[in-house]
Structures are given as structure tokens and as C-alpha cells.
Image 1 (cartoon, rainbow, N blue to C red):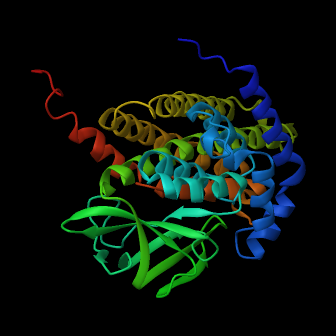
Image 2 (image 1 turned 30 degrees about the vertical axis):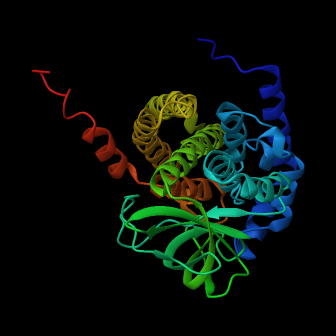
Length: 371
């Protein structure tokens, strides 16, 4: 198997890296956080780079690229801890392409590709604890379509999005619906999250909705698997930059008249950080490579990756803060923001314990010395 990136993928990486370094500076990010945690202008710039079109089929105005291309872009966005949720464009592209009727694909995919429409996944409920099959939202058929009653939490940029992918119970099973922002009965309450990004509570009261698929659980599983693979790649980029910042600091900070990078004990800790980064990178590759596998294999692979990523990002983030000393937790210094971002990634779309449970549940028939 060839693990080398193609020339097009290398060019994509370089283009995104240039944008992050020149257009998405730490100062601009701080300004976006102060203004609420989301910038439509920055999201439009991502669209102008072609990133929102990466996973959209060419027939609908996209680039038709695969999971590895998305992974490359997400790694570079992770380097800059970019707040704007490109992950949601990738999720929407996958769900519309594989589950939506042709009419909805034709209406929405070109708008997702151009960045005109920001469609986000709104699935998390307070009692669900990351379980996708726990859904209290309900839908009922009306004369003109469907009416939705739902309360969803932690919806990415929910008060800024143009439409929502919302799972709800329909005739005893979970279906997936599309709800537009201007629909009656829909309300959102936005708030900032720990890492400076933005989320919202979403409530629907007899809200008109469009049915995308009655196979809602399968579509929702695909959506979260795609999101998790993107988060893995984003975390790798963030960890890589966290390590680089830490090494740079250690080569400048002096103690007892010498730079602390000369202390063997600290060098060993940096080596452990690098090892965890490479373990995370290999599992991120694994998750992205498995996105086109059958659903059960794909879901298990993503959970395996998230278990390792959870361990790695926690270790890298904590060691970076400790190696910086007191300055590592100050808001004025950039490494604290990487630490917050990595910590929040660990909680997204199932924390490490949830994914460890997913992995162990599939080991019951084969684990142990007597298998």
C-alpha cells in the first residue's frame, strides 16, 4: 500500500497551510473569539480555497475528492486551530450524497460546495450520552410534509447556520430531516464554548421539515463517523503545532543559565510527546482510509482511532502546558488555546470512554486467552 501523498494532495496541503499562516493569524483568531467564535468572512475564504467543495460530487459543483484529501486539509486547519467548522461541510456532503433524494441533492449540494449554505448536524440530546440510537425528538406527517418537535444541544454554530440535519423518531424508527433556519417554530440560543468556538441549543416546535431518509440511524452513523475522522486529522495538526511551539519555547527559555532544552529529563518528555503524535497520526490515517469501508467496519475503525487520539491529545496537551510552566495556562500565550482546543476535540462526537466502549463491545467474541 502506498502511503505517499499525491502531488495534488501536497499542493492542497501547501495552499491551506499558506492561508492559515498568512490569513488566520493568532491575532485574527482572538478577534473572532471576541466577536462570538465564528466568522462568516473566514468561512467564505475557506470556500474560496475550494475546501467546502472537497467532498461534494463533481455533478453538483464540487471537487469530488476523497477522505484522504479532506484529512490533509483538516490537518492544516488544525495547525491554526481554525474555529470555522469545515467538518460540517464534509458531513453535509456525505449525508446528502448518500442518503438525500435527488431533488434535495440538486438544491443543497451546490450551495454547500460554494459556501453559500452552512448546513450543520444537530443530533446531540442531553440524555443520549453520545448514543446515536437514543433520540427523543419526534416527527409527524402533515398535509404538506412533516412537523418536527426537538431539542438539540451543542449544535456547531447553531445560531449562524443556514440549515440543520436533525434526527427524529418517525413511525417507531429514527429518520433524518432537513430544517431550514427560517422555518416557523425554530429557535436557537448561541454561546461560546471552552476553546473559543461557537455552539447553540436548537429547539423545534411543530417546525416544518423535509424528510431526507427514513434510514436515519444509518445516515447519522455515517455523519458522526465522517465527523470523527475529520476531528482526528484536525487533532493531529493541532498536536503537531503544539509540539513545535513547545520545542521552540524550550530552545529559548533559560534556567540556571542554560536553555531548558538541554535538560535530559525534559528531552525525554518531548520524545514521548512525539511518539504520541505519531501514534495518533497513524490512527488518523487508518480512520480516513476506512471511511469507504462497509458501515460496521467503518464505525469500528473510527472508534479505534478515537481511543488512541484521546490518549495522545490529552498527553500532548498536558505535557505542553507543563513544559511551559505558568505561562502555559495564560490566555495571552498561544499554547493554552491549543490545549483547550485539543481538550474540546476529545469530547466531540463521543469521548474516549464512549469509543472505548464501542471497541470493547465488538471484542466480546474474540477477546481473551481462550478465543
